Image (cartoon, rainbow, N blue to C red; front, side):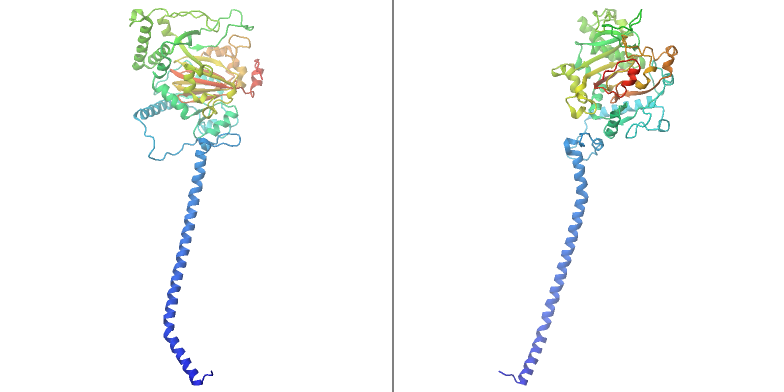
Length: 526
């Protein structure tokens, strides 16, 4: 149907009116919706930004923590490269964090720690390195990652020995000793990798602060009765003795074509002695030298107990001169002679305990030693891999407990050696195999082969061997917790500065210096 113009105009007017009436509410809802959309969009953008920030923070914190956890906890607490070599990071001290399960030290542990600090302070006061980095070219407490040229520094024999004669074994504060030390000292927990480099280079050094070693040192040195309770007063052990300080190794059995006519064996021989008696006599030597009444009292208690066990009664002073029931041949072919109590008081005794794996299979002194010194046990590679270089060539654990003044003549051994001190102090005077021709050694075939023929503490004997005065040496004083690495063929002269406990373990031979020993007239079997 056609629309009239009036109808069309009417409809347009009505439409405009309706539009005018309804357009306002429509625009209002649209604006509100737009605001809500913008708000929701802003919230979404704000949420996305927050999530991005959170993600970045998680990655920034989590990745280093995960890496650290892998280093600290992976592979049973240690990292290794393709060859199984441990990384330095494994040996840095780990920061202690408080936790519900944190170990609270006992009173006994705190007291032991305090005693260890006092011993360290005393040691640092008595024995100080004479030279610093400006003199040596390296800092002995912060050595470079590999041995520097000329390491270790050595000085003329006469200069070192005149500075501190080996006979002078007692130093009382405020006096002190300047030590001609050329050896590096490494911290097991922070410088393990560097120490390993020096060991691979077959250079001597000292390593300390190994918790396994220091725990043994704390037990042995803190309680003088600790080892006594283990070894007791019944079992006798092979013990060297001498009326003089100098002990020279010798062997009389077998053929010795270079034994000079009129040869007289050294004054030291062997006897059998309980650990309790050795401790008694070592405490007496220290007590007299230091004027320490407590040590003398402990020695006297041990003496009374020993004599009462021997006689079945408490002995008086007049019973103090009976003979000990010793005799027969020692294993070197010498004669074991009897000693009175008075003669024993004047002598020096060097207590020995040789432990081997076969004997360690059942309850025995050997088993005790291997259980105590896990770091010298080739069966326990996690503990011993640094110290027992070649487990297939281990040669047992040899313990030498020394008393003040006991001195072992200079000599070399044809194997690498790790030497640990668990109590007291020992002075080691060392020399490189390159100095073999200057050491005045007994020749091949002599009963004391490989040992120096002169007394290093006697200047008159230096003059009789002018070659000795051309040689070079250095020295180091070891104390409880120290381990000395001594490569194959290195010379060592040992002075016991107090009652001390030392055990060493050998493991294999290296050949870098074999030609130097052969040039000196000795056979070195390859």
